[in-house]
Image (cartoon, rainbow, N blue to C red; front, side):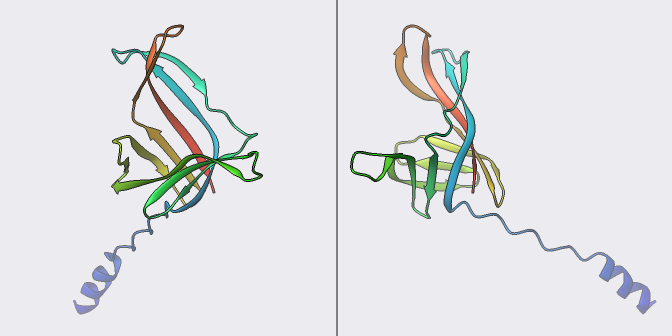
Length: 140
């Protein structure tokens, strides 16, 4: 009886959960899609996100996210597209101080997919687009 109890308890042990991959570090943009919507939220257009050249990438720290382009600027340095911006993380949501949110769609050791919240843009009279969002795919 003792043997059966030991056998059953050993068989029921759970494997430890795999560690959550780190979001921190450099992420190189591979591809993605931009979406354009009208004021009512109807999808009007999709277009591929630009890919290299130039190489776009993110640098994510515990406190900030910065967007870069490897196009060399007139000063000979890599261009900073969006300066390091503070963010908070709650589960799969990354929220900038201005309220813009990025949703982590996928995060593995070497792959990251981020979907932006819809943001209001200046009305584009030729397309009718008034809101934009993106889904971008990155690799280490």
